[in-house]
Length: 384
Image 1: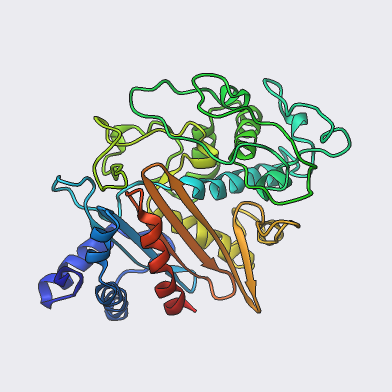
Image 2: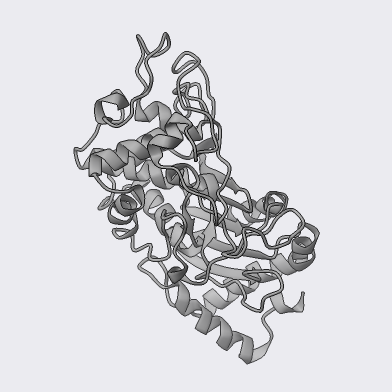
C-alpha cells in the first residue's frame, strides 16, 4: 500500500505528468495547493486500506474524481485494466457505468426541450412512430411523459437489463421495447396507475432512448455525441455499444471472483444505451456534473439554463428522483446522485449543489458495490 503515498521528487514529477491527462476548462494546473490535495486523498485511501479492500472485493481496478467548489481538483486510478495483465488504470481509462447512464440521457432530453424539439410534459407517443406505449386502462386518462419516465413514476415495466456477451446478437431499440429476440427482457408497457408510485424502470428509459432517436433521426450514441459529449468536451465518453476497441484504455470486465469475463473482447455490450450503456471516465463525467452544478447556481447557463437544471434537481412526487438523478435534501444541503450496476461493473457519483462539491467512483468488478459503499462515507466527510 506504500504506492498510495507521495514519496520525494520522483513521485511529485509523476503527479505533475499525470495531471496533464485531466486538463479542461474547469481544471486548474497543479500548484503547491494541488499537491496538498493529492496528499489528502491518497493518504485517506492509504489509511482506508484501498489495496487490501480491492482484493477483498475482487475488484481489479478503481478510478476516482473529486470536485471542489465547481472544479475538478483530483483524479486518480488504481489497480489494473485486466487481472493478470500489466496495463494499469489511469485517469483516461473508460468504464461501463450502468444506470449512471440515465443522467446523461436525461440531460440530452432536457437539451432537446431547450432547443424546442420536445416538451417533457407531453405524451411520448406524440414523438414516436416505429413503436408506441401500448394503450390500456392505465393510459386511457393519463399520459406517459418524459418527466414521469425520468423520475420513474410512469408505471412502466422492466427494471433493468442483462448485458450481451461478445458473440451475442444485439437487439434494436424497438426489439427491446417489444421484448423480441434477441432482446433478453420482457416487453415494456404500463401496468400500474401512471404517477401513483415510484417504480424504477430501465424500460422507461429505453422509451426515452427511442424518443431521442426518432426526434433526431440518428442512432442514440450519435445523437448523444452531438448533443452532450461534444458541447461539454467529454472526449472519453460514448454510448456506442459495443464500445469500439479504437477508444483504447478500456477497463475490462471481471466477475464476482475477480476473474476476467466476456472474453475474448473482455467487456459486454449494453444496447439499452440510455439506461445502462454509457462508457466514460470519472474526469470526463465530472464535466457534466460541474456544468449542472454551475447552471443550478446560475453561474454557467450556456448549455442549459438555470430554470431547467433547477427543475431537473426537484423530486417528482411520489418519487425521490428528479429528472434523471436521485435527490436527497438535508437542510440546505441538496445532493444529486446515481449508482450504476452492469454485470461486471459498478459505479456511483454524488454532487452537492450549494457548495458545488462532488465525487465519482468507478470499478471494473461485479462486487464493486460493496467497496463503493465503504468509500462513500469517507468522501462525504471530506467534502461536507
